[in-house]
Image (tube, rainbow, N blue to C red; front, side, top):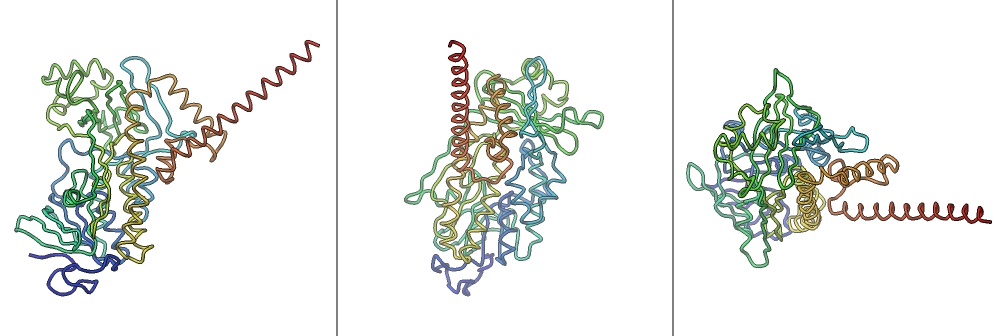
Length: 465
């Protein structure tokens, strides 16, 4: 069986048979492997350019089957994600089902709660939104776009990069397809990437953290939120932490980021008594809010946290996108935001190149690779900040100082967090800008200190006379 825009023995849109069109031939048909967030967004963007888009997803339609237990991690959608969603008219709809979080509430083992605003003026927010809910909205948007076809329960078993031919396994048997451009948007364990990564010149690495994640729930209490809904809640415990994000049903989705083995790990807690004793000691204020704690802990799966790096992202008619190209850990809340930027950039590269495949793909890779490398490093660093540094008096003083500088030097001094979350400044430009800002502030402080010292010396000299 053959499906896709170029099905059958007749010539495809490029006028060539068998996928032998020149590399700079115009793209008319696209096959996207993976109907997750970025795959659906890209389908809608490319359909708006008049392209025929087929989306292949190995799972059944999640709008029908529902989400997997323990796999519904919330997303923190911020400026980059909203910019991308606005291009297909979904930003307002996404915000309508999101809850703004304007800062972090810190939960110590004992004592008063702490609070750290995300922005200098305390008004800017990242937005907690359900991954499954956003995926359903994007699926609807893609499905309604002219020229888009969704194919569920189609598992990729092979792809030929030079020709753009795909082989897929379905409940009805093998299906063959072909497209001018094949986009692998099928996650960190991408089947599309596997099909090309063993070719000559392909560099690939995956680095797993010794920390995994597991989801728990804080339900609504008497119809209300049990915690402040305008905050991301963190229980920082050094090398581990628990976080909680609000949901529109007034519950909170909690995520444990713990070592997988060893003391204080997922593997160390096996019995209900061990679970409750540990939580009573480490998260005493949360335990009364978690009536399903033991059940959630015992039956929700432990997920892995991996950083994927590879190069090249493009080969023949194939391009990688999102986690398939650059999976990152979730500690800066930028995974979906970054993948959405990939979609915007690939769409723009195709438009700027007149839909010619080769120049478009090279432009896309050249623009995005340095930026995704930068956010991968920042995300890893932010785990240490969230789980440990937020408790430090020095870190808290530094945060207050940065916010003071932002208010005093509006637009000229912007913190790392604000540049990442509240602007679309390229990720790769953020650290160089921070260094320039800090050097300028340091130089200004040195001049001011020298001026004060000079004035004091002048006064003392005059008095000695």
